[in-house]
Length: 456
Image 1: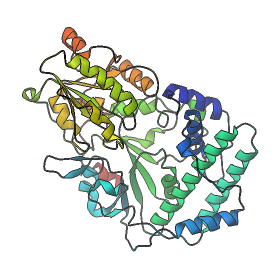
Image 2: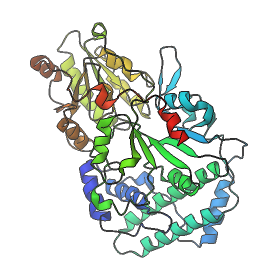
Image 3: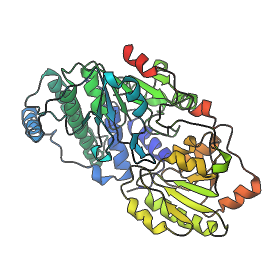
Image 4: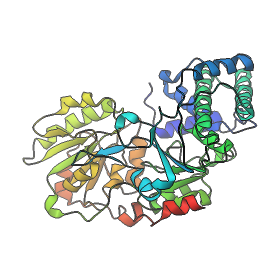
């Protein structure tokens, strides 16, 4: 898999799709689906390649989809007018309870009018249903499913006839179209004829099937910001060349943002009309409070990104060598809660390096640490108000331009892995940047905001 930067991926996207319209269908613009394919091809994500059936007659394709749906369970369930798709991002309290990072306040406010569906049942957070509880057998195709499938078939066939796309790009794009239609049909049957009016979820990218189902069922689709949004982002800050392509382009009806900073980032793109960007304040489960100076320890917190152990492990090994030169200082490595290769970090354990439990609360460590370092992470912003100095490893490859962007905004101090950050910290008397104020990043949530949204 190629180690391309986000800038390189964006440049390739503009070059490949900037003046193309093959993805425009009658039902939707499938630009984002084509984007997935083009990016996968550019990066060599071979695990994203699937067997597809768009070359077969439509009737045969429908028979295959029906056959696949027969494997699903059929359960009786009821949905309220509002649905929350719980992504499974949780942390564990000191008493051992798992708390939903994004859904707690939403459900506390409108839970009696909202059904929660846990998309990651293995996380154990309490919900009304798991995604496995609400699988529906789809033994036929109604006019809406037919129309969307026929539309995708036509787009896929135009793609096949095109001399513009490479054979590899075509394979990746058709694989992405297959995933999209599978998701669309799943959520269309899950939500159809159940009286749902609004659906709340996180992450619009790779969830286009959910958005399409909501579109066809006249359900308002509302995204909750779920982490870092950066001006280098592939899916949140689009170049103006894509404005036409993104019309009817499977974007949510609204996006709820933590604070003014995040809206300023989105304002730089072309895809979010002003009335779709809503600053609602901090709806994360954690309540911010002024840090207690007596809780501060000589700790460097390392907050990792999932699936990037090949980068973080050697960086931390280098960092350990410097920490050993400063008696009384230690490292705590806080893995991303969705990290699937956590055991790879075990080799880092030593007298100066601790690995935090996977579902532990990041804010408990931000209260204690004096320094935080990562490549890029939402936790740079989570440190607002905690009197923490943020460093970012800026090198090459994926994530490096995110890090440089954060440095340009004054959020982090850029360093390379071979630099002694404790020497920099001690010699320059560094303080957390003024840019990271609570009111700018995570202002207090507007009282009753979720009730206001569902009453519109």
